[in-house]
Image 1 (spheres, rainbow, N blue to C red):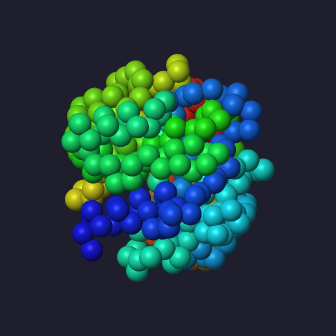
Image 2 (image 1 turned 90 degrees about the vertical axis):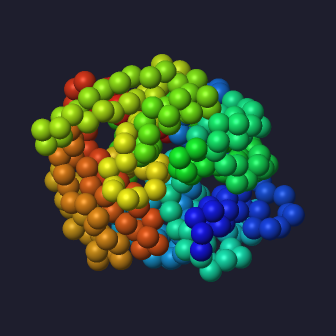
Length: 308
C-alpha cells in the first residue's frame, strides 16, 4: 500500500465518516469555553488501533487510563480519560473499510479558521486529505500532511479550546509534542503560516555535538518543538510525549511494557535538554515517548505549558 493510500485511510478514521453520510457528533473539548481560541496549541490526541482490547489493557496497566465508548458514533470512538480528565480518543481500525495497518497516534492542533488553514496547507505544497468536516459539538476537523509529509489534524473547536493547565503534568498525561522533520527551517516557516507561532532557538549538546532545537510558542506559552528527524531513513512525523515523574518511575513502567504486549524501542536515556526519555510501542504498533523533566529553566522553557 502506498503512503498516500495509508494517509487517506487515516483521514477517514480521524474524520469518523468511514464513507458514511451519517452526521457525526463528538463531545466538545470544553464545556465552559474558558480557554477561548488558542490556535497553535495541541488540544487533543487520537489513537488508531488494530488491537483495541490489548491497547486498553496496555494503557490502563501502565497509566490507569480509562476508556469510554460513544454510542453517538456507533461505538467506534472511545474517549480516553486520565485522572478523570478526557485527554484523547481511540478508533478501532478493524471497523474501518480497510485491511491496511494505520495504527498510530495523531496530534491535533487548534486553528482559528480550519478552512483558511487548509487553503494555506495546499498553497504551501502540503496535502489536504480530509477537507473541513463537521464533528458536531466538537467543531470542524481536517487531516493534512505538511509539505514534508508529516501528518497532523487541524481542529476549529465549536465551543472554545481547553484552557491551559498548570506547569505540573501527572505521570501518564500528555506533556509535549515535537515535529521530527527533514528541513527545520522550511517546517518552521510552514507552521508559522498555520498558527501565530513565535520562535525560540535553542541548542543542546548531545554526545559532544550541538543539536539545534526550536520551540514554537503561541499566546505566550511554548506549544510544540521542532527538530531534525533523529530516526534515520524514517518519514517526518509528529511525536508526542507522556509525562513520567522520575527515572525510577520510568524504569518501572518500561519493565511492564513487554508483559502488557508492547515493546521498548528505546530504553531510558538522558536527554540533552533535560530529563530522561524512552520510546515504547503499544500492542497495536503505535509509538509514544515517555519523558521526565528536572526542575529548573529547561522545564519552565519547554514543558511548563501543560498541553491540557
